[in-house]
Length: 510
Image 1 (spheres, rainbow, N blue to C red):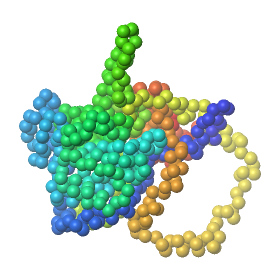
Image 2 (spheres, rainbow, N blue to C red):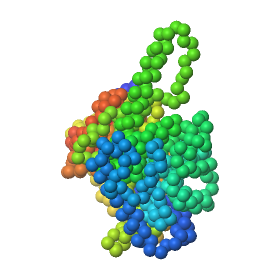
Image 3 (cartoon, rainbow, N blue to C red):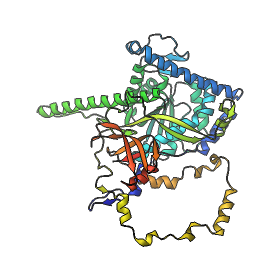
Image 4 (cartoon, one colour):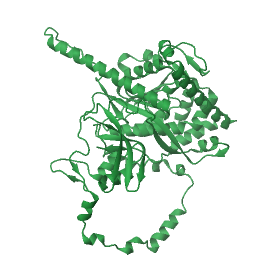
């Protein structure tokens, strides 16, 4: 058991586990969204729906192959000339301008197939990311939100669940008219919606909004950057999104090597851009302070600097860059009825759940807070030391407590009769376990560099647990490393107990 030093307010083993828990075993799609999807599909032509879903999946694969070919064979030429025609480019790409108005145009068939097969999984991944942002930043309550590449408003559904009271205005950027109509149809029967505006492009949004009204508390781009083949246009779009961000920017892509590379590139670019901006502002302040004649100094409207909220515990170079591994996470969700009906694998029905893999990064303006690391001042006893302190009375086993009474057995057998084949049929109020989440929110992991991120599933071998962890190597979080951490029961039974209950995506204290 941990022995805290006097005079310091430290984590206990219980609060340490609660603060480090960021993942969810399985996510259930809310009842309101499932009903909206069913209602939307009833109004559409469902003929050959299985084929439409299969064609949509093949289209995603073609886009992925085209992007990989562009990156492998024509990356240098494409950066020099983004409008240069390239062979094997996906037939549905349309380039409108040099400022990133590039998108995959969804027709009605693709939109219906997307809502039926992909929307629940995308919603689940976005909800997982935004939920962690809320837990890591309890003081952050967005009022004005921008959703780039909104599609059928999967991110809007997730934001309403995570911040149900604070969001007042939502701006959606979606070039596909069919996706915009699908979004309106899915949202039409909901109550308490914020003020929603739809735009075809970032340029249209900038034209219709005044300069003082362009900044958003939260900007989200989910599963959109991967559909853009040009690195130059991706950087341009991300720079525009960052200029529209006053506080937090979230980028989300599929959990593939290509998606992870996109997230890593955009993360590095924003951090580098803000470091350069901060250096320029410092030089300007020094110059103005040394100049006696200057009286008025114009202050920047946005905070200088940036840091990573999640998943990285540091702001340095990604330690997995130029390696065979890539940073991604997984969220399991229970399939909706539309997914179980229209998605097939070799003509056979699918399982009742699926695993959505995704990559993401959440960045915030300003400087990373300097906080004490969670294990500072904590001392842990070894298993041998714990055994030496046991009382002989604690070793006596009461065998009567090991068996259930007849009344308990009858009560348990009665409850088994009420089981349902899918938990998603339970009411929406039971899905989110609101009391548990409120309790968890009070026990949060800080934004200091003392919390590492568990990458991949921990390996449990006997009485030891091996974990691959991305962690900060400096107190200020300026540099990081990827390490294999081994925790044994004999050396540290408290942390070993926590390691056995940690899974992929959780935090690890240092």
